[in-house]
Length: 309
Image 1 (spheres, rainbow, N blue to C red):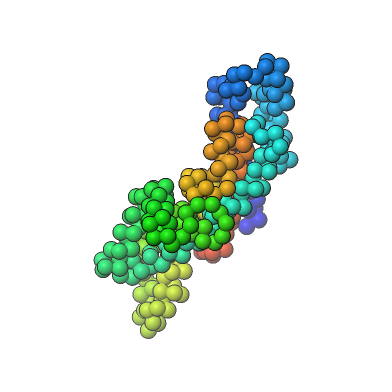
Image 2 (cartoon, rainbow, N blue to C red):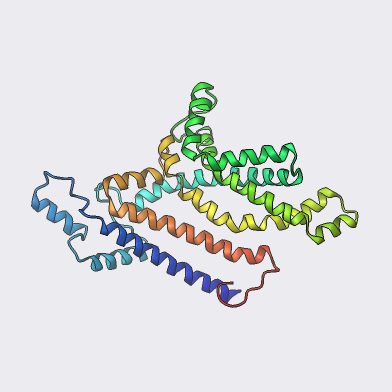
């Protein structure tokens, strides 16, 4: 187990290095520079800025400097703000994005599992149809469309909840629902398929033949095994929710990292774009690593043999 964990950790480090390298190369392959739009800037000032941010160095030197900064957990200064560094942006924005992502994850997992179990236990009946219609709507409707609908009706027409800013719990409800709908639908469909497969297994039929009540068979045997595929993808879903809220944050005026990333793109702020990308990639890779290791504890039947298993 220790050997497996160490291998997974080394692969995680290698993957993160690849993300840093690819992102750095792509960002610097775009023609022009961050100060190109400052047309009235004196040449001496322009040269000083290039020197200050190491943009006058060869690309390989800039790459080495950036790797050294990341190793020291320093994402460097912002090109557009003289008083706030990229680390400050992350420290201020990430807690908000994390709060929104975790709340959306809780909604998605809770209601996704409930819908999936209800649908599987009532196959080809009206609860199954209703659950799957909700799942199809959740997958088909983009989050920004759902967000607009909720703002218009729940927030403006009916006045039930606030529609913007990030002040109290009530302000978090609509953006969390908008963000959770698609993963909830995916979890519901995955759980339904897994439950249908598990309910037809011999050990479930054996438990029923022993006279164990249907509810106990479902709780002790069916759900416990059917939930494994959901757990497998939970790391990716969690990472997507925590890191994929850019549009929702922008629509609801939430001061998270999404706003920082979008402004960084518009301003062509290399350190901000690189810093947020690397930071989110590190979270994604870490969560995948945790899920890989935790999977062995969840299902003891899995044997760890050879490379990558």
